[in-house]
Image (tube, rainbow, N blue to C red; front, side):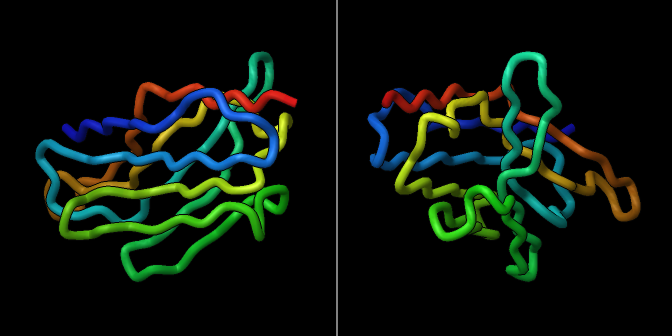
Length: 120
């Protein structure tokens, strides 16, 4: 199994910054991609940003130019730097990993979620 531990959420004023971190641990053979999703009450979980083991990234249109994602493969850790935060960025943010616990045994893993609140 793979466990994901998130940190870095909190309350910030509009225009401010936060940095989320997520460390993967457990029986990990390899991690193909890591990233962040967010979800508001009553809404579907949506992709915020994703980075592959090779460094390719994807971002939601709404966060392009404001958020960056990076990854430390040696530490199985992914970071989300969120700048110029807006009230509409308020959500629970979930860390995600597409990981293999054994060669060919691949699964999707999720963290518990961390609250990000941006006040206007």
